Image (cartoon, rainbow, N blue to C red; front, side, top):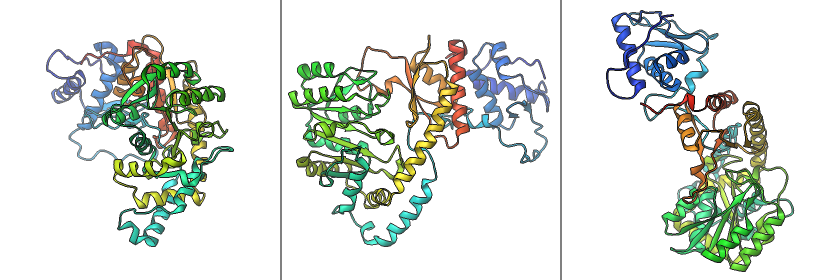
Length: 474
């Protein structure tokens, strides 16, 4: 192995590109002959005073240029560019795992996605393929036209999917939708007007707040804690700000994973009735829970819109969702959904209904739960000793960052290392002074558990090294 040290004082641009250029120059000049082993990334980073990530990206660029080859456990070697065809890789030498997570040199780089929580792949595509074939053969006339009526089977599917314990909505109150987000926006459009205020917890699924702001509604914020929405602060907000509607995730809140106790739910309902506030109950993650929970819809059916869908438990690409409405509001929400989305696609609504009514969705959900449980166990093992919240059926964890990390900084460093996560700002519906120093790490998107573990290990390494492993220079 050479004692090669590059000179980065020359040239312009990011450090990793200057380092990659220096590798190419020194190979051309003979300073790095074919077969020469480059210094280990950690050693070189220390010797030249840059981050490990900078060296990793530089080596990746050199590999893309055909200058070097590298494998985990063996190191990085200079290739002989006079050899036209490198030796074929044998079956005993699989592609190194590290290549799957090394950041590329361009914005379109491939990374481990831990910033999403759609249902993991458990083989649902085969079932969906068969059902789509049957639907296209049986309903060719309806696929070629707009959806003008809703079969009772669609509402029955919504009733079955949203039912929880002893509570189930009336099928006639169900509005099938193109996913949960669309269901929520249809409710907002149906019961509020531009300028109306909508209440959100200080941490929540903030895409709803941003969407509501886009169509002229105003977001106001109240506190939540380890048990979810704070009923007392909600009442303070109602008395001072007079919101028309409140968005809540009482069973498995995103991102905190809190489940609101029944007594607190009752207190929230009392406040909503006192100040005449509509309730949106987002149960998108609650469908993954095996123990049953108390719903707002069972406590206040006259003012609660209970929404759920398939994205976390079956397949996000199906875009299947439902809103269970107060009885007199279903037609209004149905019309609003058509106006804000352009209408319900027949093929997706029929697919959603058949998945549920034939029992396929329940089978897939059970497989999804088992896969998530396996991945959550990996998370608990790798992040042992750190402060985080998780649940065996939920595909993300809420991690408290140790000193001196800030959530935005940690997110950026993780991205530099090839792992995409969400910082706390992603879940703030409005600007706020309170800082939580937390990140959300999803683990359902990588196709294999080995990739999940690889992403976790990268994040664990960053946590262990602290800011000593981070430098934004270059």
